[in-house]
Image (cartoon, rainbow, N blue to C red; front, side):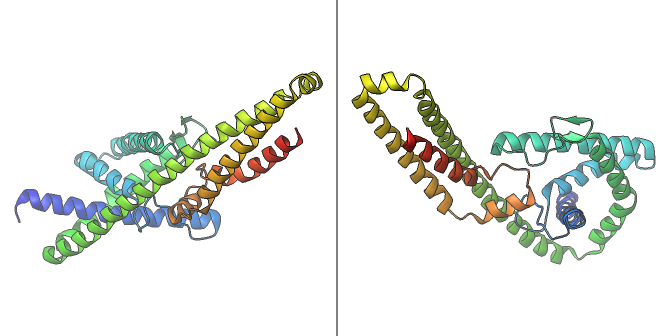
Length: 273
């Protein structure tokens, strides 16, 4: 195996190993905080890609100056914070959801990053570069390459399949949320229309009784259409939606379920008018 292929192979190994380590770290953190197992990863499998990319970037850039602890620490903070900000920003723009939110933390920037976790990432990278990575590198070098390539091919194939399935599922969820927003907008229009009728109701009823009945009928028909849309959304059982709701509780996936109660209240309001 030539030098270029060897480098690619080793980098892929580092990515898989640290993505798995990152997943383990997230699971342990969630278990300590919530007292139960939560698959915190973006994907279904036991790996967090951001950790794999993060360690590869940090080690690739900072390994030459790893003997200077201060520079290594500051560089780690800068690189990991930048990666976290870009990842959080892109995820929100693509999927219309904020996957983590540091808004309640002091010294945060748009909820994507905050000082506390940036400093902690610097410590984690310091330990990784100085202590963990040399051991991982020695393990990769000593592991039989033929067997390593076979295992790596299987793992990366599974990873790619998982990524495609998960992204497609999230896009589907995103479309459901867009539809939910449209239903909510229509509900607001119906509610506003029903509320406006309170003013000048007596005069309006006396002068335009027939027109009022027709409009009320139209509102009820529209409400039935919204109810049918909600029923279709609620009947779609989405495993990925359930898992991500547990893994990322700050996501607003619950908007689909909130519509039922709002529809019932709106129905009662319109029926009374």
